[in-house]
Length: 112
Image 1 (cartoon, rainbow, N blue to C red):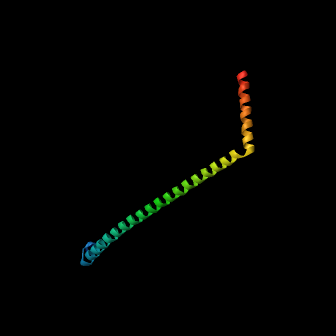
Image 2: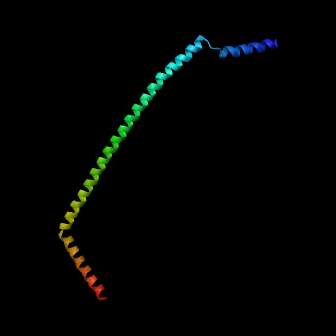
Image 3: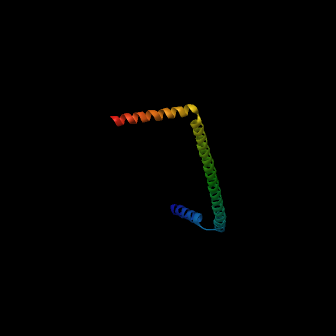
């Protein structure tokens, strides 16, 4: 009886790994379905990569344009402010006084 149990267990193992028409069809259907899925996945990945890359490039270009315009307007405002400050009479008098005092200090240093 023990021999029969061993033979029946070995027989079950052989039946599990035995190739039949159903298993062969299942295997080939799986293989044939994986190939198109892989192709579609690769194409989708490439399209998504290209779109994301182009979007990132466009964002960077627009941000650099905006930053360049901001810098240009900042320095334009600064130049305008400097021109206005240089034309104001109190500032002109202050600069003339500073120049006179600097010349006096230089002359004092020459004497020493």
